[in-house]
Length: 224
Ligand code: DX5
Ligand code: ZN
Image (cartoon, rainbow, N blue to C red; front, side, top):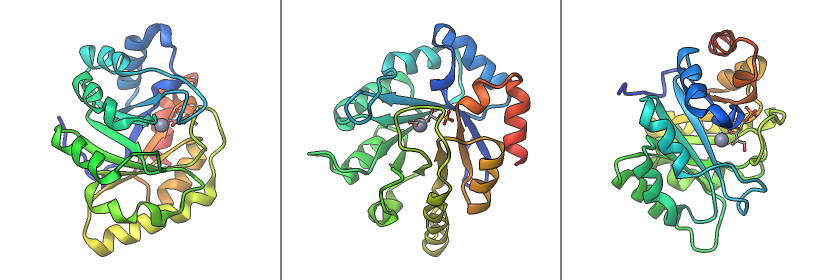
C-alpha cells in the first residue's frame, strides 16, 4: 500500500453519507471516483448522540477493497474495542482526546501503533489545542473536528482553523510529520479554507456521496 505523507493532498469520503444498503458498491464508487482513503465513523450512542456501525462494517468493506481505511472512533471505550477494529482491517485508528473516565490517551495511542495501525488523535471544536499538545509526538494524524461530532451534513466551523495553524507551526518546530485532517462540513469552498490553513486530509461525506457526480465533486475538492 502507498505510504502517505503529510505532503499528500488526501480526500477521504465518509461512508456515513453512503447508501448503507449497498456499502460495497458505495465503496467502489468512492474509489472509482478518486477517493484516496475511506473515512469510517464509528458512533456508540454514548460518546455522541448517534449510532452508526461497528467492526463488522469495516470488515465488510475491507474484504472486497484495499482502499486505506481511516477509522474515526467516537466511542466511550476505545481501548476495549481496539483489537476488534484492528482485526477488521483498519489502517488508521483515530480516538478522541476528550476525557473519559479511564481513558489513558498515551496508552491508547501506543496500543494502536503496537497493533500495526497508524494512530490518530481527534479534538472537538470546543476543545483547546493545548489538550492535544502532549501527544503530538505519538500520532500519525491530528483530526481537527470542524463540526460537533455525531452527524453528517452540518456546517463547517471556520473558527477552528486557528488550531490547524497551531498544529502546522508545532509540526514544523518539532520536526514531526503527522497529517492534519479536517472533518465535518467539508466541500469545495471550505476545503480551500482548510487547505490554506494547512490541513492535508479532507473528510467529505455529504459533499461527495450525495453529489450528482461523485468524481467531479472529489476532483473539485482536490483542486480547491
Ligand atoms: C461527524 C463525522 C463526519 C461526517 C462528516 O460526526 O465525524 O465524518 O461523516 O459528514 P459531512 O461531510 O456530511 O459533514
Ligand atoms: Zn469522522
